[in-house]
Figure (cartoon, rainbow, N blue to C red):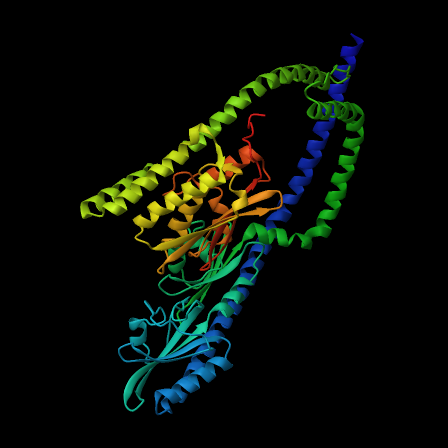
Length: 577
């Protein structure tokens, strides 16, 4: 009876403290509301002014850049008009290109768009240019004064693809009476770097569009084109110059009268408010100390009534976490009813958890093996259908040798895939499986790529997960080689790395950004692949642990290398253990 009365007093005291703390906090909060309203309005006004200044400075830098481009083109046109032959022009253009680091190329075209001469910074031009992105017939036709293109990739150089802006002027009666176009490809990296370095809060930024709504430059351009983020360009194009608020986002727009390009600044009000918190530190200090005093009082009382028993219970829980198998817990007596109930419940829970652990151990082995079988079962029917369709097409055309080779490769491919039910197979067999797949794809893609193997023969008897290389080769073909204009090359290498082995698939394809590399390891499967790269990574880690698996290195326009790290093993482990 006495113990029940004590427990009720404890609960009454705790309830009183909670009510007191809540009431004090509500009073402080109510007093802060008017201040926060005024403060938020001030921050919003300051944000509008600050963003407008940033956008105007960016527009001024952009106009200076364009004005400098026009001035340099004007000087070049004077030099060209004063020359009597192409050799003389070529010497002058090469000199100008060497002097000005921002100039990638200076080109002279005839009235039909044929390249007459091109001055560069000593970089060799391609023997044959499939598509010259710096030449736009419609843009050139409108260049009686000056015309400026959108940023694009310069495609005339051999193994060098700078990002440039082309400015062109139509020169009449030059070179003995010809009509010519004088065009300069300026590196756009200077203005891009300037825009990238603009800081508006933690995540604010500026970007540039033209009058039609096409993106001239955006710091997150690759993510927009990849569909990872979305910019409401259609709505922005319809807005006049000025500042506009859309929920938490603040837009400021300013246009250039000469080029028609528009600078758009984007900022987030919640970030701006956080950055301005330092201005109200003094005002909030008194509130902070009051709350701290109340919290200290509550802490002292709670430490005696709740904290010590709770700490003892927490320590018991930690011991149970570390030694769950053989831990024994005896509920302690407690004066607080709620903590006593928690202690009793924890004691019952330890018994239930230990019982369940025994059951889970027996079920986990079956579950892990089932998971592996599910991962292995993702065979791509599209690949089989396309291969059979290619074989049928070869037979109809009378190419029996090619059909026989594809059928033989397909047979080897599926024979090694089955592997008598084993998940791990010798690296030697995995390389045969990869070569069979490459043979089939080489026929299907009409020899658009070559492949070669670079293998340490001493590693062929070690085991690896089956169907490890084929998804990586498939990714290299579909996403690296297929978009290429030129023929591609795939290199499969096997080499030792200390106690581990690295299986690598490299291509000279279009490459990927860091965001795309990270996304590849998150996809369950791609649009065309059967067993995805994430599947391979999952299976390697299930068998060998988290320290093993896939890593990706890639550079745009250079290629991609995907490496699989596995340990040196000669016998298949039991993944259920």
